[in-house]
Length: 421
Image (tube, rainbow, N blue to C red; front, side, top):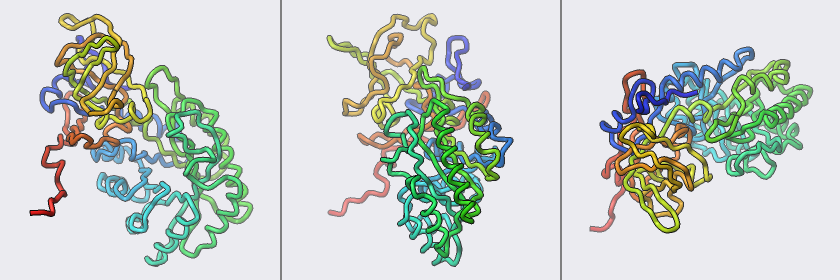
């Protein structure tokens, strides 16, 4: 559910017409709905209300400070994978003791920052990382709380680039022999082994892979406790999909209901890491049509948004619905259907937002909304082709707030120097 709709033929976000925002901030821009973000968080968090739990928003999905601050006010924690995300999360007001730090490549400096901040725990991915965290904690005269991430070898049935729980993945420890790995970790003097972590992937549209992975983690916890390790946390990851196209992913309630029988008797605090399911449908990318180009082979709708603004179609061949901001069929708008590629100005054949898409033929200057762009949209944006990154805007009832201004050309070269006279 989201708060983007047509009203009198014009798309609004909550009670704000998208065309009004475009007139003030220019295009392209990202637009988020405050009401949608809050609703999605509450629905997800509420699904696990019967269990001791922490809902740690995956900062990598949408890291704008205003979005993080909004979720912090709702009680969210944060799932981070870098020192920069730690900085963002704490600056937005997320308490450090509600932050979990994952990722395969943590540096000594990042580990030190997290220990100094007092985060809840590290999710550890390898034995060299265990040794590094132990050393850094020892240098500070403290002990680091850690959960070991195990790889349950469960197929999440998603795009291979975002499948993280198969045995060939770079993430986590193999499930086979995991108990012995936990015992070695517990023997290190500056570590406190408190949890098990598993995360099998993203944009998952079926419940059984989740249940399978949680059952394997629960069996491991039972084995660890029999060996004397007091496991207090189980991080079950995130990954619920959203309906970009015709997918019918499970709801948070369906996920919680499916895994509850496994979790109920574990006596652990359950950590979840939702990202896309909270932010994905809460945001759109608004772009303006520059021209329509007809060739004998294909028709192209050329817009001012590009792959550097929204990488997902080029990276994953991901589908995003594209809607006209002025509803097709409204008096004064074109209505003829065409099949076209929606492409941007970047000098790459991979610069597309949609391919072979059926849509009402737009006119030069028309606005289009690229839907479900709130997760892994701006967060993956770049300055490729020396294009300034676009603004981020949040609609709030009948008002809107610019929460990141459009970059300037001066921003593009800030920090660069020419060493020769």
